[in-house]
Length: 479
Ligand SMILES: *[C@@H]1O[C@H](CO)[C@@H](O)[C@H](O)[C@H]1NC(C)=O
Ligand SMILES: *[C@@H]1O[C@H](CO)[C@@H](O)[C@H](O)[C@H]1NC(C)=O
Ligand SMILES: *[C@@H]1O[C@H](CO)[C@@H](O)[C@H](O)[C@H]1NC(C)=O
Image (cartoon, rainbow, N blue to C red; front, top):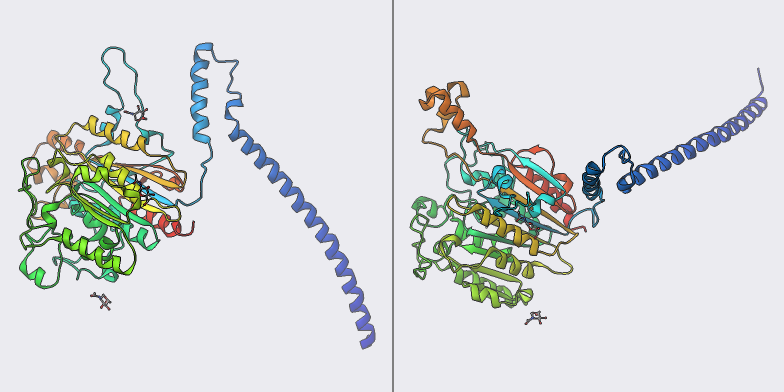
């Protein structure tokens, strides 16, 4: 039996040995690590070099004929453009979205070809064709599962799926209470500290507006049941003026005067649109907006204005304004030939929104109605976009949707039939069904450029847009 003293000695010896073992093992480990890091760096350097110098990469230059080489060189130049590393910050400071309703992928393909008699110039690009990323958003509205336009807007801008029915038959969730309300992308932008704006050539109380700052089914009071009004429900026009999201919007521009005011000027160039809601409760929400801002200006110095004519908008020094409300038609802007162009509205809006230290979120809606010249409208939009200064810290999206949403017929529950039962259901023959399916609305397209544009890829659901914007906006305030 070793004495305690002996034990201690043995222990000391062993400890010494284990220390040595650790030193040796440590040295080997460090050597291995250093080698690995070196290999890693070399490989990385090579990869980066390869990417950076595509033009120098030998693509069998000596093997292709001179004629072919011209096109290869051109192609490699385009490839180089595609491989160029994105500059700018990781997350955008600003988010700028153009939503084009009423055109499909087919229209985009067709109108890329300019109309030039005689010598064809081939096809050119729209500006959004050169954006770095693109995604398709599935259209889940079909003859089998029709949907309300309002639900589509809500899916796009609040991320609530189309097949989720909300609140049953009730007309509203008690409005005006943001804690109970949906967080639309605009509200999220406001919470992130961005300046926000919504510009449309439809009514500011239309379905897009409703999805951004309201939740009502009614644009104005006209068709709203008395019971709902008594319950405290509000229509969209009123929600725009009294809701937190609406109040915080720095820029709001479009049509819809007849929803906001019960008494509107009727001129031969700006008639009241009989097909749309007409307010009849004696309201003057434009005046209410102005007095609200006046009260606000007593607390902090803000500059605000309501404009209703193109010349007023043109002469406005927008850079000095904090809040701007522009209502230029009783109904849609297309109903008033004297309404301002989309280009002018966008230009002025950006002047109000852009500040050095604060980012902005602007949603521009351009509605191309079925009777309009689509080519001309797309070219106008292309021009509006090319007039904008390109900013490295801005995520720019162009969303193209065809805005064809089959409406639910009276009995929605009957419409969940499978395709094989379609013929009985519609009482149509096979060819007619095929034709209908062919008319199925195409996917929407999202073209994206700028920081985080790489989020937009592949084929996604309608709600993907709102969810990815939520992610982007959650970080915009940091940088
Ligand atoms: C879009 O605008 C760009 C830049 O101004 C122009 O080069 C291009 O031809 C336009 N595209 C179409 C299809 O009009
Ligand atoms: C909003 O909802 C919260 C929680 O349910 C409630 O405490 C608050 O009083 C409501 N505000 C209004 C204005 O109704
Ligand atoms: C517009 O307003 C800004 C800020 O108040 C001012 O600096 C600028 O001089 C004004 N421009 C014109 C043309 O009045």
